[in-house]
Length: 206
Image 1: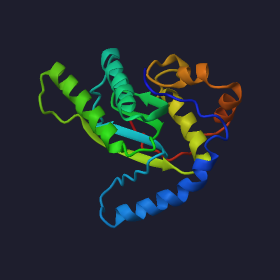
Image 2: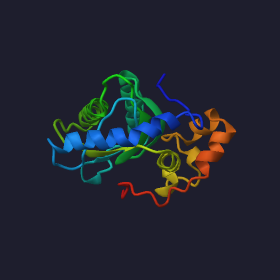
Image 3: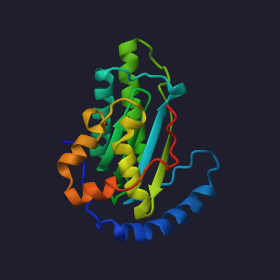
Image 4: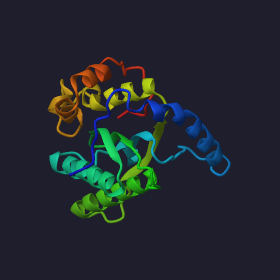
């Protein structure tokens, strides 16, 4: 069973209070050594939002079988490295997820490498295209305060609506909307739903 958690209101406040300064310091350390984009700043124990795209936005994962493959691979990768998923949306040419990193050093890069390597091998085997590049790159954000966290959570849960896939995200089997509604307390559902997400700047032109 994959590791997915419901974060109660207020339980992350101590984390957010220290996260901003920690991310800023870590970012400065990375910038002294690395000048390419996107910048991947990793701090154990923090919460991250991740977006990844296929090469040239190709719909390599079109169809239920391939979407299921990608979703299950995400669950397995998160479970393997003890990352706690809080929201996810998976599509034929990109995905988003929000997850809390473990306190030990299990970097986001490890999850992404495992996820992308496995899924690329699987569909290339099916398509008889060995060595074909499937994934392009990923973008990640270390979420440092509460008012950034909840709208992003709402954004990922409802991403299938944004892309016009379904009128109600709970009907889409490759996102966390239905799971979240079934597991979260009513107060948390109301809180997350109260945050607008239409003004968030996220790479999502797919």
